[in-house]
Image (tube, rainbow, N blue to C red; front, side):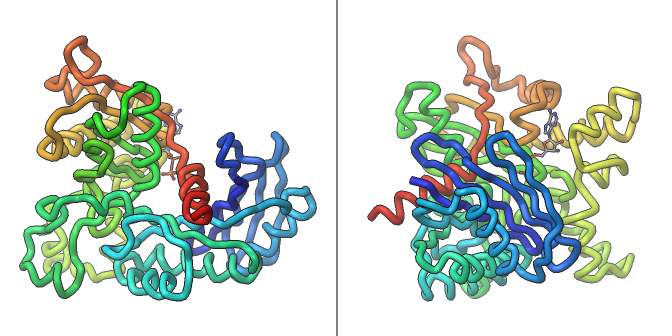
Length: 374
Ligand code: ADP
């Protein structure tokens, strides 16, 4: 089945037409800076297409994407649209066909993901306008972690904060962890239901998941995608007392804290150079101490978060790296593993270490197929 996969951010739309049988992307691309200096880029059959476009909103961006499909003969046989939706709250533990009730429920989750769910909804509305005859499916980043036990998802806050405000750990990168778990079991030739895995998704955002017999048993991201590991520009877990201190002693308000923790911290904040691991590895090679320390903190904190998942699993068969950094950087993987020598990873009697490329778009397409086929 040919599925149009959409990932809509506040000012961008990532798109791909994915063949669920072969896993091939016949076309993929990006519209960025919607509402400003909008650019359209697409790849089809090894050819790159680029142009400036006029797109004041997501509906216009999708109209351009649709015309491109028409011009290039890609518009036929698209069977459905699969949307990446970031936050499904407690309501969605699997992918669903989008109807008015689902849209309302996604809206209700917006309070938990104010930067992500509203643009996801704009994308859904725009896709309904541009592709009115196609079924639309929502695939949630949080859904895979719906199996966390309550002792893993509750924070040490008064219980009513969970009951009244839904403040709990949800986790993200669910489509990636689910895809990689399945792929790992295929590679090992073992049933996923027999395996216990730790998967580290290391990209611009980073998280690990403990996958126990096919289900997520714990993960390192929480209510929002800020918890856990040090990321490209996000701080990861810090002493919550730091926030109190910044408010009380340095006059930080919501906007300043939000910017600090989400945009100015992590690899970028530590190095003062870049959030991009490739750049930092290059600078470290040239002798930059700040790049070196940023990489070292990153690796140590990944290792520490991996260790935090130990209580979630009765055994460990394999530790799997994925995401841009996890898949491509051997020096980073080596450094992380050096902090985890206690596990004897890769040794004859120790758990395996693997690198398994993720493919969130294919996971979304496969889920979409499964939902619309019913
Ligand atoms: P996103 O989370 O936005 O999907 P990716 O999974 O593509 O991001 O990961 C982006 C990160 O992967 C960047 O920090 C980039 O530098 C890093 N990366 C990609 N290729 C390499 C490489 N060969 N060596 C080191 N880091 C790499």
